[in-house]
Figure 1 (cartoon, rainbow, N blue to C red):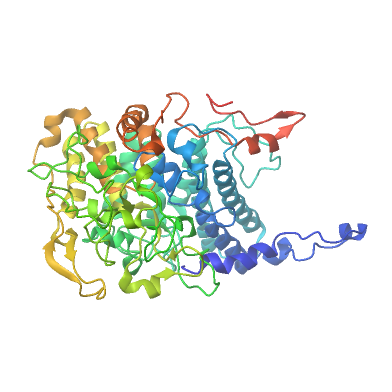
Figure 2 (cartoon, rainbow, N blue to C red):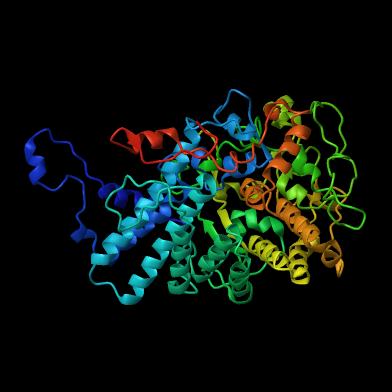
Length: 586
């Protein structure tokens, strides 16, 4: 499955007409370089089209970081857990996204729109050709249709959570100037339900969606609509019966870091992931997580580019009480010590405040090992500390010991073979906890949250000090790099909090567990907490770091991104666009 993306390009190009003749006789002849339906209408042809639909998961045919499947711009930067980084003049289209001053002309959102509809177009092509294909068994037809509809559900889910009202185009559509005046949640449900009903438990290639990935996504779809009983029903099945596409019973891996290590990926926690591969022979990083190529520390072994810096607010969130519980309220009152304004040639010693060890697998901070690359040196690795703070993102960083295999240096910025996790099992547990709490089942909700916290508390998740970067396999000591203290909630704790307090604890656990994985903004919106949380973030962070100074979330507008103006212009019939702009945008 790692080879899906680069096998597909020849197949997809071959399906595109190349009108290169200036004479009228081209109307009488097949387009040069195109494949007709009768050539594709067989098992090999349909499978290639399906591979093409998977290949759109990373969006690289349309853009780069603008379309990254991790949603690092739209979910994490916009969610207050990361600064854009670099400097103010670099990739300036991200600045208004970070502060909610975005307008419909922003090129980033147009590329994201285009990338998702490219994926949808490819899934519809699969379904259209499959309908007339010959020589395919009914079992294979069922599986291929289910995979295509799973992928279509994913692409539409991305559009729905970003733009809300979007046009629905499927394999039966003949008029493509469709309005965006119908809620597409029922259609997304139907695609994931079909996939759940028709996909096998396991697949021959690990990157293909299976029955249980569809079940998890269907549960997530219900949760976004506040259909808590239906969501609970799906999550119950996923948790008790689910297996990965390669047949592993779902569970939490012992080592939190293994979710972000290419050498340990496609493990029992991976529900659905975009497969990445390094050094694929193309001499590009198109298949090596190109969407995150900007997001490595600057002036470092990684060369480029200093984007995607965790916020002070996020780092402060990992502080714990003496009992090992999170400081949910007012965690910024006693901020975590950092090296803001302190040069790398000046002394700095991290303090010994108790913190959750997930902090140091998520946030790179001075004096703490940056995986096995040695201690993070602070300001020397930060492109412009005065505007975006002292921290570096960590979950997408490859290890020094395996860099020859899992990094790709074919471009001006690195690529990596680290998969992008769309859904992992910890995410499922926390979504299930949320559904249970909304239904009043606080004891079960606490059990699911504690499964996540108990994993964080395992000795395997302590970050040890690191003394010899020249010896990446042997440079660690047995001493913790910080004062780590995390524990599960004691029996009856959620019941004592009540439903509202229990939900707050679940929401905060998602922040800690899933930080910098592109979920935060979309979570805040669906919880109805975006204005409260993000405006508090702007008040705190904006008073310290100027890149988010003046940011403000407006209720009734900023829950969704504007429909791209370019798309409104293109969807014009008789001088009037069939697309309606989202409320609050011109």
